[in-house]
Length: 271
Image 1 (cartoon, rainbow, N blue to C red):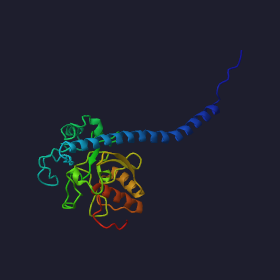
Image 2: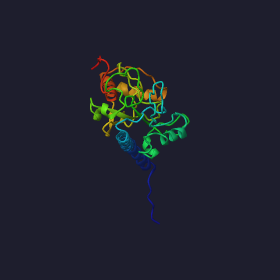
Image 3: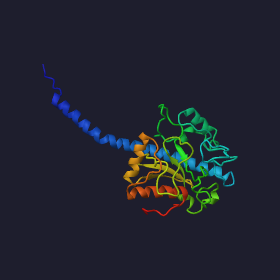
Image 4: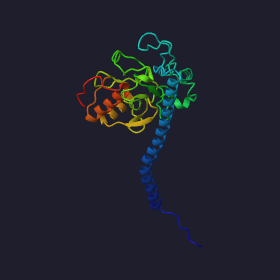
C-alpha cells in the first residue's frame, strides 16, 4: 500500500502565519478603499444637495432656502424666517422618524425626493443605536441663523444669491457633513479666533462640503490638534470656543471661517 503524505503541524502553522501577515497588511488598505468609496457617495450626495439648493433659489428670484432646521416661519429669536419653510421642517436628535418626516416636509424635498441623499453612508448613530436619517447641515451664513455677530456686516449672512459676490460662490460654503443632525445649522465664530461647533472629522481626517456654485469637495484637516479635538468630541460631546494649539490648526480654523462668512471678522494672531 502506498503512503499518503499530508501537511505537518509546522507546515500548517507556517501557512496560517503567512495568511495572518497578509491580512494585517491588506485590511488597512481595504478599509481605506471602502472609506474612499463612502466618501465618493457622500460627495455625490452633497453635489445633488447643492444643485437642489441652487434650483430652489433660481425658482424663487434668488432667495435662499431657510437653512435653519426646525425654524420654519420663525419670527422671533435666532430664526428670523417669517414666511419661510425650513429646508428640514422638524428637529429631533433622538427620533429617526421625526427626522425623516422633517426631511419630507422640508422645502428641498420637491427637488430631492430620496431620503438616502440626505445622509452620509458613515453617519453616526443616535444614542439609542438607530441610524441617523440626516447628517448634513447648512452653514449659519446661508440664510440660517443670523447671529448678532454678523448683523449689518455686508455679505456675511446672506438671504439672496445676489449677495454672494466677494468672495465668489465657488469659495462660499453651503452644506457640511457633520455626521449627525444638528439643532439648527453649522456654527463657526466670525469675531474671534476660536471654533464654535467642532470641526467634523469624516472620511479620513477631514470633512465633505458643498459650495454656493454647486461643486463639492473634501477638506483634509492640516492640524493634528484639529483632528484630535474632533475625535475626542465624538465621545465627550460639544465643547465650544476652543482655540487651536498649532499653526496648522489655525489654518483649518481660518479656512472654515472664511468659507462660512467670506472673511474674518478680526485680525488673526496666527495668520
